[in-house]
Image 1 (cartoon, rainbow, N blue to C red):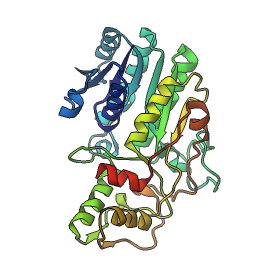
Image 2: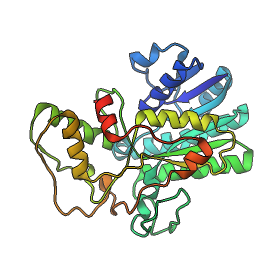
Image 3: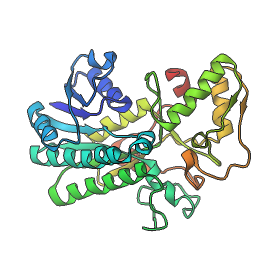
Amino acid sequence: MTILITGAGLIGTETARLLAGRGVPVVLADIREPDAGASQLAHVSFETLDVRDTAAVGDLVKRCGADRLVHTAAVLSNGMRADPINGLRVNLMGTANVLHAARHAGVKRVVTISSTTVLYSGFGSLGTDEIPEDARLHLVTDRPRSLYAMTKLANEYMGHLFRDLYGVSHVALRFAAVLGGHAKTQSSVPGQMFELLVAAAKSGDTLDLDNPLYQWGGTEEFVDLRDCARAIICALDAPAPALGVYNIAHPKLWTLAQAVAEVARVHGAFECRLPKNLTSGFAGFPHMRPAASCTAAAKSELGFSCAHALGDTLFHWW
């Protein structure tokens, strides 16, 4: 049966590529044409779709006869800062439209993309044990600290409610900072940061890493784009994903200095001037990460664990 993927960005395209390699029919839908590599994949067809359009989403889900659906279309943090209203329409109403269409078309499984940033606001109060999906957060003081994180948390709740109220089989995957892809310009904060680091390493230039969005105190976790696609397929196939929300992250944590050193190891020595005495978390969040995300549920309920460490990611994608 056909799998519909909304969003022809890095995650949607890589998932389509992996499914196509297995001979699975895929419809890839986006408001913009995908890159040439994605549009020429065997078993993959493309449809123009604006996920903000309720009727258009419902029509496409029925017309393509999809029995499973992967919703990756979203506005990322930088886009949310540039145009909050459009970002809210895409991220919130787009997800509502997809879940609504899936419900009425009888889609067997819907996988949506969330983010570990939904828990960053609790880093100041969480302990040093691995952070589970159902971590305890205070509704007010631990509220999301970015519009992007807010939309992702809201979408998790939305998916749970469509499951509880209407029987939609929904799974949300909370990705750590995603790295990889062959886009000419990286759209995510972590992708942009590593793009700068790799460029400096390859040229041997000195880099001042002075953008606060590219800094963090303590440690941070990442996930390779290839592991994201594998996790999505595991979520599509999982027979009984009871929890419904899963952390997807490589278990190794990295300090900023260690990440810079890993870039130098893979791509060549360079000088990178780092700020000292950082006390904030990644991408401008106020608190440092107290522990790694727990991935036990993804392993037990989805049969998934990450395969690609940071060095492998840097070598493969850059």
